[in-house]
Amino acid sequence: MPTSWYNILPDLPKSLPPPTDPDEGQSRLKRLEEVLLAHCLEQEGSEERWIRIPDGIRELYEQAGRPRPLIRARRLEEKLKTPARLYYKAEFYSPTGSHKVNTALAQAYYARKEGYERLSTETGAGQWGSALAYAASLVGLELVVYWVRAVYKWKDERRHFMKAFNARVRASPSKHTEVGRGLLKEDPEHLGSLGIAVSEGLEEAGKDPRTIYCLGSVLNHVLLHQTIIGLETKLQMEMVDDYPDVMISCLGGGSNFGGFVLPFVADVIKGRKIRFIATQSEAAPNLQGEYRYDFADHAELTPMLKMYTLGHRKKMQPIKADGLRYHGAAPIISLLRHEGYIDTIAYPADESYVFEKARIFTTTEGFLPAPESAYSITGAIDEALRCKETGEEEVIAFNISGHGLLDIEAYREKLGI
Ligand SMILES: *Cc1c(COP(=O)(O)O)cnc(C)c1O
Image 1 (tube, protein in one colour):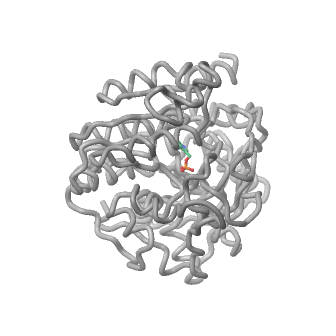
Image 2 (image 1 turned 60 degrees about the vertical axis):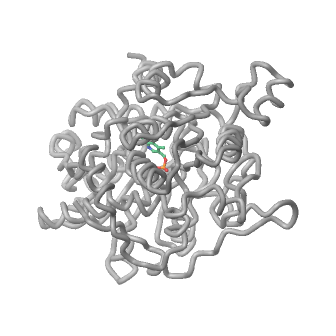
């Protein structure tokens, strides 16, 4: 297992545009400094290429089953009759179901070290809330999760799962915050949104000095923690004396994609060739949006980040891969896209195309992917089929960000099983 995370900031082809404040209103930058963990804030702008993973976090990673396997998809290759060699990174072996534990464990560890007793956060699809519930319980912290009511209402199993780790889970908007009470007065059955849940999580942390707020994607330090995925993959590729021509993963805010590819982007900046493909939904193709400054949340509580965005108030239709439904892509990924390092593709929002591809993977390799990860698989299968036509023996590496064992209902609906 790697002993340091890789920080791409000093190696980027251009320096990363810093977060800014809007022209009017309170300073969000100052506020961010108050709400982020000191360790994470330092990492956010660090120019150190390698940042040592504290022993305590390495132990937690081991506890969570790291390093995770890189698997040669031989059965899938045979099924597709492709000359390409396919490898997938198995982040689905996560105890809570996704790669998000890689940063949840780091953030919980730092929170404990900085003397906090409680964490607060929001969750949309439920994977981030689950990962942080797990991490908080392992290091001995309490957690309050504000969960978008529209999802809270139907994902019973994820809710019970978080509670099994002693997390307090509240449907958002809730009566526990001022923001929430205001919205409930207007509509007692308000279905909420991720932006509202962020506001409640921030308010919760703001009123209690023992509580700190945590974020699960988009920011530089989150991508940094996730580079454990790509660094392991690199060592594993070396062990089998192979190297990718194409790397593919799904992208919502950019943490699993970034974690998987950034250590390889470093090689490409130095002259090697790899094609990086971020797969998305047509419901939220943020990498095809505009490259400009925008807020990271609906309520405009965060600073403005330079990123590819669809607009922070963009209405997006619901999809099963809810984790991919975010308006902006991480500033690091956005810069790399702008400089021509990253390709993207968006699949139809009705999702039957990606669920069919996920089924080919499940019935050959035997793992049920998260709906989000089905987008990685679709990208990999389409590339493998292209190689079949051209006869190219390319090496295709893809990341499977999570398992779908709590998403059976989505499979039933989309595949009619
Ligand atoms: C949250 C999530 C994603 C999308 O978030 P990124 O930050 O883009 O990685 C993808 N897959 C799974 C399983 C998730 O839980």
